[in-house]
Image (cartoon, rainbow, N blue to C red; front, top):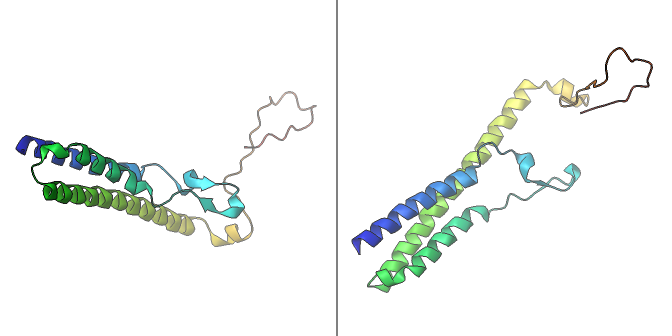
Length: 144
């Protein structure tokens, strides 16, 4: 019973760490979750993401239920593992949202409000691909 319990606890810890990092998603931005045109402002970053790995952990506990003598032990361990892994995922999601809010506030401080009010766009740059010797042709208007 002790070796099986140790394996399940280590597996639960690994699942909690995985759920934290999957839901924190380092390097992701709010635009990664955008769906449809920008005017609709829709995103697919739903709250069900942190629930996927805890449900898998509970399924693993259920398949290993023959290792336990009492049914209440498996219920208690399964519920505890579910909530530990779920809290890790929610914490990762919360930290990612907090990083996004910090970045948005930083951008508001860096970009002057007068520039944004005038409709300025900081992400549009002109890229001249043609060579400078051949200026007889009409400007192709290559934009990024």
